[in-house]
Length: 239
Length: 378
Ligand SMILES: [Fe+2]
Ligand SMILES: [Fe+2]
Image (cartoon, chains in turn red, brown):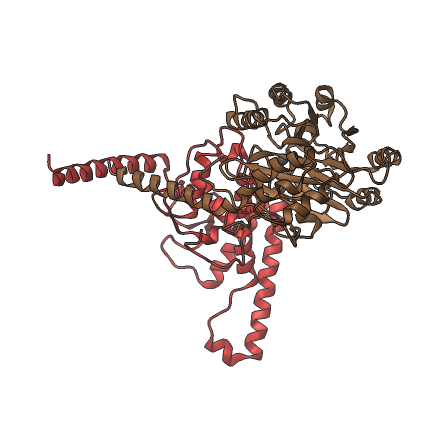
């Protein structure tokens, strides 16, 4: 065979191999199943409204299926559904919900005041984010970071087979310098992202199986590492 | 298939890198000759006659200073922080301790003794401590043991003491008074939280685990130290071994001893004091008044430098290459000079050795500087 044939053969083999690998990894990482809501059975005379938990529902007397609720009716229905749901929850959940609701109410009050005192700018500018938005963002991020923190400090959660956890060499994620990625790593034969180095560490010092880039653990590890370097100047390519 | 070209390039890269690193450290190589010379000088009276062999003129001054009290210079070696798991779980850490033992056993002449710097085990499991004891039996020279927090917080030292004896003690060797401290006591954080011994050990084993207390020598041991020092002449050179640095570097990682000032105060009346510590897994040098401080290398993994509080006199070691798992690790030797001061040698695996001399610390970094890193250590 001449050189060209060799190249052709290599390309074909490579394509075949990579599609197998891709298929295997897709198979291994089936998407997380989101909850689905089973349709609620009714006698067909009254409208049935279901809460987003997929369980709580109520019949709206005098409104036929397919009809439209008036805003007032809709508010009453949603209040009743929430009341039903709250009644089923443990005390902590109820309390957290009330707290959050209070924040929303206060935000609305504050917004209303701003609108009346500064009507012009309130009309020109889109509605600002509320305290509830900030609270939600913070809570969700903290959850992700704290899951990453747990994995980072636990050889078993990481899937290490020799007891070595990330934090054993990187207390508080020191010396992980996520701000220097992407950068070319000749040992990896490509431009490496932080996740490639995470996988390198999982496979080598920790002797574990590498994580799919979209694996919840990989996402959480990246979140934790980056959160530790908040405020650091980005320096892609730095070695 | 394809990687042939890449393999070749990688090989080239690694070769070039090696040459380049050698080039960088060339400046350090006169040290080897110097060390041999120090020993020669100690034996021979005709110091001036050999002066022409030396590349730097200030070294003659160093030699003269080295023996004002006419003590017999000697050398001891160290191995530290092996963090062993059982062999079936983690063979690499076991191999690395064995490598250090082989290094020390190959020293010719043999050191007077070998200090083991603590953290022999990772979680103080019987299987880990006993495995460590068995490997350390292969050391040819006499061994002096020190305890680390990873050896202690499962059974609060029961097995360690059974295997290795007292956690703090002193001894005299060739005119130098040696003191080994147990500096990693922690105030009880476990009883109130009802933690099991294993939970307690797990928490202490996490360097950045804020649920633990700080390291301390403690009152009882400080009283013992005061009594021990009462019989020692103020001109006798003192060398202290402690697992944690006997000063306050970085509390969040316990690079720290809570009662460091009190211990330093006990050592202050003495002319010549050196502290050799483990725990920090890195090249680390400091001086506080009359006390010189030297860290020890680990055989398991290197720690990053603390983000704050690094002593001014520390010449950082180059940051370890993550693609090489024995980078930043090693063992080393300590030359005790005629005046009781010490020259410290860090025998880094994969790199040329790094030296931190008594003269460098005595001159507050004005002379005899160790070679600098080429890259930032982050
Ligand atoms: Fe250690
Ligand atoms: Fe330690």
